[in-house]
Amino acid sequence: MAIQISIWERRDNGSREIMGSTALELCRIMRKNKGINSARFYWSGSEEIVFIAEGEDSALDSLPKVLDWGSDYAKLAFTLADLARLTLNKRLMTPQTGAQNYQLADR
Image 1 (cartoon, rainbow, N blue to C red):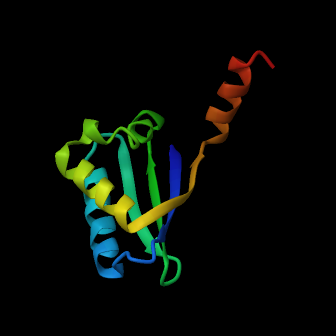
Image 2: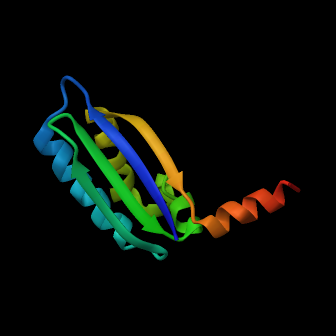
């Protein structure tokens, strides 16, 4: 099971209310997808939202491919991009996946 973390910082003209409701809807859509076990967001202050999604690597790999998840997800993703800027996007992998990657590199 892998974890995807992304942090979004509100733009000067971005509405906090719309940003929060957009984040909530994005999480609801993510959770409906096969392989995603959990998708939540948190405010880390008045200017920043943190998304944390947990699931299979293959499901998390499709997160950036918004068209694979339908037009509602795509609309929400672009709404969020209008309101905030992505400042961090990290994948946390399991030790097993890390070891497999190491072995694939012939190390």
